[in-house]
Length: 261
Ligand code: MF3
Ligand code: CO
Image (cartoon, rainbow, N blue to C red; front, side, top):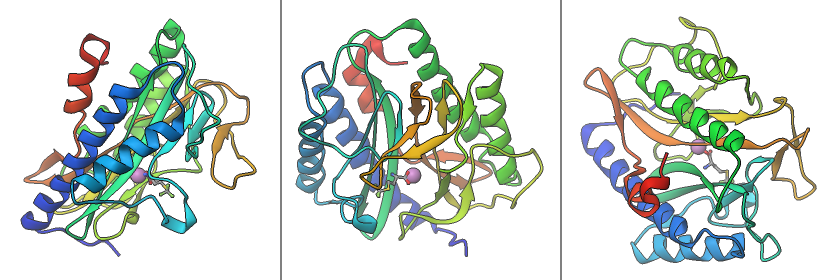
Protein backbone atom coordinates (compact mmCIF):
# COMPACT_ATOMS: atom_id res chain seq x y z
CA UNK A 1 0.00 0.00 0.00
CA UNK A 2 1.31 3.45 -0.93
CA UNK A 3 1.06 6.11 1.77
CA UNK A 4 0.75 9.59 0.29
CA UNK A 5 2.44 12.27 2.41
CA UNK A 6 0.97 15.64 3.36
CA UNK A 7 2.97 18.84 2.82
CA UNK A 8 3.75 18.88 6.57
CA UNK A 9 5.02 15.29 6.45
CA UNK A 10 7.16 16.08 3.43
CA UNK A 11 8.77 18.96 5.37
CA UNK A 12 9.55 16.56 8.22
CA UNK A 13 11.14 14.20 5.72
CA UNK A 14 13.22 17.08 4.36
CA UNK A 15 14.49 17.64 7.90
CA UNK A 16 15.59 13.99 8.29
CA UNK A 17 17.27 14.17 4.89
CA UNK A 18 19.02 17.44 5.75
CA UNK A 19 20.70 15.82 8.76
CA UNK A 20 21.59 12.87 6.54
CA UNK A 21 23.13 15.14 3.87
CA UNK A 22 25.23 16.86 6.50
CA UNK A 23 26.27 13.50 8.00
CA UNK A 24 27.48 12.31 4.59
CA UNK A 25 29.50 15.53 4.31
CA UNK A 26 31.13 14.81 7.68
CA UNK A 27 32.05 11.38 6.34
CA UNK A 28 33.35 13.00 3.13
CA UNK A 29 35.74 15.15 5.19
CA UNK A 30 37.28 12.02 6.69
CA UNK A 31 37.56 9.85 3.58
CA UNK A 32 41.25 9.39 2.71
CA UNK A 33 43.76 6.60 2.20
CA UNK A 34 44.52 4.92 5.55
CA UNK A 35 41.08 5.55 7.10
CA UNK A 36 38.97 2.54 8.12
CA UNK A 37 35.29 2.18 7.31
CA UNK A 38 34.63 1.68 11.06
CA UNK A 39 36.03 5.19 11.68
CA UNK A 40 33.59 6.58 9.09
CA UNK A 41 30.74 4.74 10.78
CA UNK A 42 31.54 6.30 14.17
CA UNK A 43 31.66 9.81 12.64
CA UNK A 44 28.24 9.36 11.03
CA UNK A 45 26.57 7.82 14.08
CA UNK A 46 27.84 10.56 16.38
CA UNK A 47 26.77 13.33 14.00
CA UNK A 48 23.27 11.91 13.52
CA UNK A 49 22.70 11.39 17.26
CA UNK A 50 24.12 14.86 18.09
CA UNK A 51 21.42 16.25 15.80
CA UNK A 52 18.65 14.56 17.75
CA UNK A 53 18.06 11.86 15.15
CA UNK A 54 18.38 8.08 14.98
CA UNK A 55 20.67 6.22 12.56
CA UNK A 56 17.92 3.90 11.37
CA UNK A 57 19.98 1.36 9.41
CA UNK A 58 21.44 0.25 12.73
CA UNK A 59 19.30 -2.64 13.95
CA UNK A 60 17.25 -2.77 10.74
CA UNK A 61 16.68 -6.50 10.19
CA UNK A 62 19.74 -7.00 12.39
CA UNK A 63 22.05 -4.74 10.35
CA UNK A 64 24.94 -3.94 12.74
CA UNK A 65 26.05 -0.41 11.78
CA UNK A 66 24.99 3.16 10.96
CA UNK A 67 26.52 3.19 7.48
CA UNK A 68 26.67 0.77 4.62
CA UNK A 69 30.22 1.21 3.28
CA UNK A 70 30.70 -0.64 0.00
CA UNK A 71 34.20 -0.52 -1.46
CA UNK A 72 35.12 -1.08 -5.15
CA UNK A 73 33.39 -4.29 -6.31
CA UNK A 74 31.04 -4.17 -3.32
CA UNK A 75 27.70 -2.82 -4.55
CA UNK A 76 25.64 -2.18 -1.41
CA UNK A 77 25.35 -3.16 2.27
CA UNK A 78 29.08 -3.44 3.01
CA UNK A 79 29.51 -3.55 6.79
CA UNK A 80 31.96 -1.03 8.29
CA UNK A 81 34.99 -2.67 9.85
CA UNK A 82 38.30 -1.83 11.57
CA UNK A 83 39.86 -4.23 9.08
CA UNK A 84 38.76 -2.36 5.95
CA UNK A 85 41.38 0.33 5.31
CA UNK A 86 40.76 2.69 2.38
CA UNK A 87 43.54 2.90 -0.21
CA UNK A 88 44.37 5.43 -2.90
CA UNK A 89 42.31 4.63 -6.01
CA UNK A 90 39.41 2.98 -4.16
CA UNK A 91 35.79 4.05 -4.47
CA UNK A 92 33.38 3.81 -1.54
CA UNK A 93 29.60 3.99 -1.54
CA UNK A 94 28.37 5.44 1.75
CA UNK A 95 24.67 4.80 2.32
CA UNK A 96 22.61 5.55 5.40
CA UNK A 97 19.16 6.27 6.76
CA UNK A 98 18.16 8.88 9.35
CA UNK A 99 14.95 8.82 11.42
CA UNK A 100 13.59 12.01 12.96
CA UNK A 101 10.04 13.07 13.87
CA UNK A 102 8.84 9.62 12.83
CA UNK A 103 10.09 9.84 9.24
CA UNK A 104 13.12 8.33 7.52
CA UNK A 105 15.53 9.93 5.09
CA UNK A 106 17.67 7.77 2.80
CA UNK A 107 20.65 8.81 0.69
CA UNK A 108 23.94 7.45 -0.61
CA UNK A 109 27.01 8.82 -2.39
CA UNK A 110 29.97 7.06 -3.98
CA UNK A 111 33.25 8.84 -3.23
CA UNK A 112 36.61 8.42 -4.92
CA UNK A 113 39.49 7.87 -2.46
CA UNK A 114 42.50 9.90 -3.59
CA UNK A 115 43.12 9.49 -7.31
CA UNK A 116 41.00 6.96 -9.18
CA UNK A 117 41.39 5.87 -12.80
CA UNK A 118 39.54 7.76 -15.58
CA UNK A 119 37.54 4.58 -16.22
CA UNK A 120 36.28 4.50 -12.66
CA UNK A 121 35.53 8.25 -12.68
CA UNK A 122 33.42 7.60 -15.77
CA UNK A 123 31.47 4.93 -13.86
CA UNK A 124 30.82 7.38 -11.01
CA UNK A 125 29.77 10.15 -13.37
CA UNK A 126 27.42 7.91 -15.35
CA UNK A 127 25.81 6.47 -12.22
CA UNK A 128 25.17 9.93 -10.82
CA UNK A 129 23.70 10.97 -14.17
CA UNK A 130 21.44 7.90 -13.99
CA UNK A 131 20.16 9.15 -10.63
CA UNK A 132 19.52 12.68 -11.88
CA UNK A 133 17.82 11.46 -15.07
CA UNK A 134 15.70 9.07 -12.98
CA UNK A 135 14.66 11.96 -10.73
CA UNK A 136 13.61 14.01 -13.77
CA UNK A 137 11.03 11.28 -14.43
CA UNK A 138 9.57 11.44 -10.90
CA UNK A 139 6.77 13.75 -12.00
CA UNK A 140 3.00 13.52 -11.60
CA UNK A 141 1.48 11.36 -14.32
CA UNK A 142 4.70 9.54 -15.18
CA UNK A 143 5.05 5.87 -14.32
CA UNK A 144 7.52 3.91 -12.22
CA UNK A 145 8.71 2.20 -15.42
CA UNK A 146 9.68 5.60 -16.86
CA UNK A 147 12.19 6.02 -14.03
CA UNK A 148 13.63 2.52 -14.43
CA UNK A 149 13.81 2.67 -18.22
CA UNK A 150 15.59 6.03 -18.12
CA UNK A 151 18.18 4.77 -15.63
CA UNK A 152 18.72 1.48 -17.45
CA UNK A 153 19.06 3.13 -20.87
CA UNK A 154 21.61 5.64 -19.68
CA UNK A 155 23.72 3.00 -17.93
CA UNK A 156 23.59 0.54 -20.82
CA UNK A 157 24.37 3.22 -23.41
CA UNK A 158 27.65 3.75 -21.51
CA UNK A 159 28.39 0.00 -21.59
CA UNK A 160 27.36 -0.70 -18.00
CA UNK A 161 24.68 -2.90 -16.45
CA UNK A 162 22.16 -2.24 -13.69
CA UNK A 163 21.56 -4.49 -10.70
CA UNK A 164 18.26 -6.38 -10.57
CA UNK A 165 18.38 -7.78 -7.03
CA UNK A 166 18.25 -4.41 -5.24
CA UNK A 167 15.91 -1.58 -6.07
CA UNK A 168 14.73 1.81 -4.89
CA UNK A 169 11.59 2.09 -2.80
CA UNK A 170 8.91 4.22 -1.25
CA UNK A 171 9.93 5.78 2.06
CA UNK A 172 8.20 7.48 4.98
CA UNK A 173 7.32 6.19 8.44
CA UNK A 174 8.98 2.97 7.26
CA UNK A 175 12.38 2.88 5.57
CA UNK A 176 11.03 0.64 2.84
CA UNK A 177 7.48 1.28 1.67
CA UNK A 178 5.62 0.72 -1.56
CA UNK A 179 6.09 1.30 -4.43
CA UNK A 180 9.13 -0.64 -5.58
CA UNK A 181 11.39 1.52 -7.75
CA UNK A 182 13.54 -0.71 -9.99
CA UNK A 183 16.51 0.70 -11.89
CA UNK A 184 15.30 -1.08 -15.00
CA UNK A 185 12.01 -1.41 -16.84
CA UNK A 186 9.98 -0.16 -19.71
CA UNK A 187 8.62 3.28 -20.33
CA UNK A 188 4.84 3.36 -19.77
CA UNK A 189 4.86 0.37 -17.39
CA UNK A 190 4.09 0.33 -13.67
CA UNK A 191 1.98 2.51 -11.41
CA UNK A 192 1.29 6.16 -12.16
CA UNK A 193 3.12 8.63 -9.91
CA UNK A 194 0.90 10.87 -7.79
CA UNK A 195 1.47 14.00 -5.78
CA UNK A 196 2.44 13.07 -2.21
CA UNK A 197 4.42 9.96 -3.09
CA UNK A 198 7.95 9.88 -1.66
CA UNK A 199 10.47 7.49 -3.17
CA UNK A 200 14.17 6.74 -2.77
CA UNK A 201 15.77 6.45 -6.21
CA UNK A 202 19.06 4.55 -6.04
CA UNK A 203 20.75 3.34 -9.20
CA UNK A 204 23.39 0.65 -8.62
CA UNK A 205 25.54 0.42 -11.72
CA UNK A 206 28.06 -2.28 -12.55
CA UNK A 207 31.11 -1.68 -14.71
CA UNK A 208 31.15 -5.41 -15.48
CA UNK A 209 28.35 -7.94 -15.46
CA UNK A 210 25.25 -7.27 -13.40
CA UNK A 211 25.39 -10.46 -11.33
CA UNK A 212 25.90 -9.99 -7.59
CA UNK A 213 26.68 -12.42 -4.79
CA UNK A 214 26.15 -12.00 -1.05
CA UNK A 215 29.27 -12.44 1.08
CA UNK A 216 29.33 -14.80 4.08
CA UNK A 217 28.51 -11.92 6.44
CA UNK A 218 24.96 -12.20 5.07
CA UNK A 219 24.87 -8.55 3.95
CA UNK A 220 27.64 -7.40 1.63
CA UNK A 221 26.53 -7.56 -2.00
CA UNK A 222 29.46 -7.60 -4.43
CA UNK A 223 29.95 -7.94 -8.16
CA UNK A 224 30.37 -11.64 -8.98
CA UNK A 225 33.11 -10.65 -11.46
CA UNK A 226 34.72 -8.27 -8.92
CA UNK A 227 34.50 -5.28 -11.26
CA UNK A 228 33.81 -1.88 -9.65
CA UNK A 229 30.22 -0.78 -8.94
CA UNK A 230 28.74 2.59 -8.03
CA UNK A 231 25.62 3.70 -6.15
CA UNK A 232 23.96 7.09 -5.61
CA UNK A 233 20.67 7.67 -3.82
CA UNK A 234 18.33 10.57 -3.06
CA UNK A 235 14.86 10.64 -1.47
CA UNK A 236 12.40 12.48 -3.69
CA UNK A 237 8.82 13.70 -3.22
CA UNK A 238 6.44 13.93 -6.15
CA UNK A 239 4.82 17.27 -5.59
CA UNK A 240 3.17 20.08 -7.58
CA UNK A 241 3.60 18.00 -10.69
CA UNK A 242 7.33 17.48 -10.39
CA UNK A 243 10.18 15.99 -8.37
CA UNK A 244 11.05 17.74 -5.11
CA UNK A 245 14.41 16.33 -3.99
CA UNK A 246 14.36 16.02 -0.19
CA UNK A 247 17.91 14.76 0.32
CA UNK A 248 20.87 16.92 -0.60
CA UNK A 249 24.41 16.52 -1.91
CA UNK A 250 25.06 20.27 -1.35
CA UNK A 251 27.10 19.72 1.83
CA UNK A 252 29.16 17.01 0.15
CA UNK A 253 29.78 19.50 -2.66
CA UNK A 254 31.11 22.03 -0.17
CA UNK A 255 33.57 19.46 1.17
CA UNK A 256 34.72 18.07 -2.17
CA UNK A 257 35.00 21.43 -3.97
CA UNK A 258 36.27 20.93 -7.52
CA UNK A 259 36.46 17.16 -6.91
CA UNK A 260 32.63 17.08 -6.77
CA UNK A 261 31.12 15.48 -9.85
N1 MF3 B 1 19.81 2.68 2.78
C1 MF3 B 1 19.49 1.37 2.28
C2 MF3 B 1 18.46 1.47 1.19
O1 MF3 B 1 18.65 2.23 0.32
C3 MF3 B 1 19.04 0.48 3.35
C4 MF3 B 1 20.15 -0.21 3.91
S1 MF3 B 1 19.64 -1.73 4.48
C5 MF3 B 1 20.17 -1.68 6.07
O2 MF3 B 1 17.45 0.87 1.16
F1 MF3 B 1 19.95 -2.81 6.58
F2 MF3 B 1 21.41 -1.35 6.08
F3 MF3 B 1 19.50 -0.76 6.71
CO1 CO C 1 17.24 3.20 -0.13
